[in-house]
Length: 112
Image (tube, rainbow, N blue to C red; front, side, top):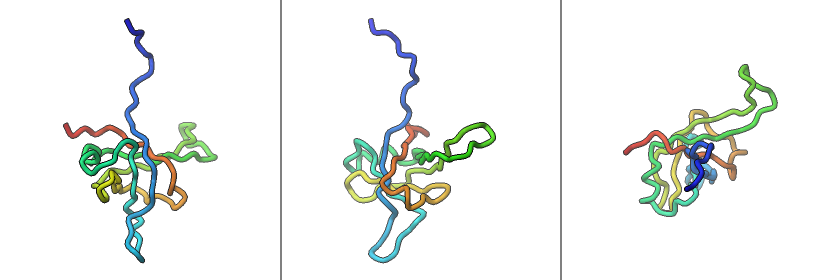
């Protein structure tokens, strides 16, 4: 019989910021491209449509609750291409330093 684990289940999947939606000369800063770990096709990306995305940074000063982490929330809008990259819109546009950084793609809200 397996021992029950005391850790709560993980409610997110890791992702990486690839950059912003862009053309040859124009860039849309309000739409970020995210590559989700384990998603390699457009059909796989459909599961994540509407899911919340968290970009977490660490600040030097704590807020009124003593928390030094800042979270920028976003949402997965749609697929970008056929290789599992998705487009996300954040409440505040991601900074350029975020390119290449990590995000958490939450497994909620559920669409089932």
